[in-house]
Image 1 (cartoon, rainbow over the protein chains, first blue to last red):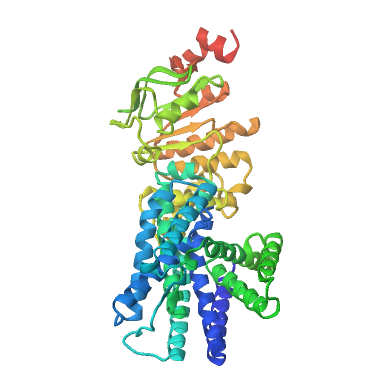
Image 2 (tube, rainbow over the protein chains, first blue to last red):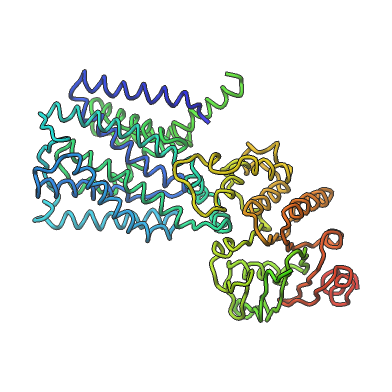
Length: 318
Length: 247
């Protein structure tokens, strides 16, 4: 187990870095917010990974939340940004609750593919209903007020950066608490032994549904924030490629601790930025090589590697 | 002393194979039942039907006065039935202690979402159970690192944490070195006596059966061929010929 101290130091340093970079280089605000959004979404996907389940469709919840924000903002332009975000999360939770009832009956490849299939149906529907959804062009969202204040673009991004960072820290903390709670440990028990869960009087489906519900909300929040910072929603938000990226980050960062999602997202965003600047055209190759490297060197992800190092140091009396 | 579990004309066919053949059976509170029989005689199948894992093709099962025929295992477990398995069913990625903590947390039926697992259960109770089954020293090791004998003990301990009225153990000593079998059974029986749990175990070792059981039931071809005090059942003609191979 990584010492709490290390996690706290990492959280404080990471947060400061986000704030300082964002304020010193205004262009970096958007990629930082996007990175944090990926981290929040990956928290949800990591919960599924802990249960031994990999979903290739979770981006649909980001899409549902994003389009909810867009529809509401276009219908009632006076609605506050915070309300829009809450509505987006609410919509994704509702969708997660309903879809969850069906998908928690399946495991492994069936769970992954069923999620993928549902997300692709949504993706196609949004793409086809041009008059309602703007098709593949998506929908623009005019900048809403935030907590009643109107902001210029720079100010809006700064407030979103601070808000997203606060949400990331708060949710990271809560999700870690969940992982270590009775519910969270039972969720991890789905990976190793459902028979035993059943013979402890627990419903494995119920335990997984709880995790699925939370994960839909987390991915939904990331989608709502993403829609706000981009000022645009497109069906791509819910494509299987995006779902795959969440899984990629979850594996890269590791699901041993909630902070893994953010470490993974940071590396993912850095690799993407670096590749966009110096290796345009082959950035997927760079990501692929990174993933292969992580799987070979640290199968439990970055946080798994850190936790192992820390455990060794503790054993040596460090 | 009331009847804890009772079956009436319980039967199950797998295609042409009759795994349970109209079994009328009952177990009273306070008994220690040993079930003997050759492989394939239907001992585990009978347990699987009684605990809801398999649905019978005919007949009924009552547990603690309630008709539990066809119910899901988790609902029967919640009525007070604990079970350990021939192949231990553990949470292999969790530590020994965590396995027991999850059991203790499951007992209440409501799992907390934010309270850490270790704080949602009574640590002394976990310590006591670890002590009882001799796993205190290994409490922080992963369940997957335990040798077979200790896995069996942990499997039983997880069922015991539920404070069941009846504990069914499927071959608790199989896969355990013969010199360790008596220690293991002595440990288990001590734990069961302390909690006044009625028990039912499947066992092949005649020494263990005659030493620890108050009653023996012999299964032959999906039927209870003999049922009664150990000395009587073990001496009966059919049991000696079909199961023990000594006649």
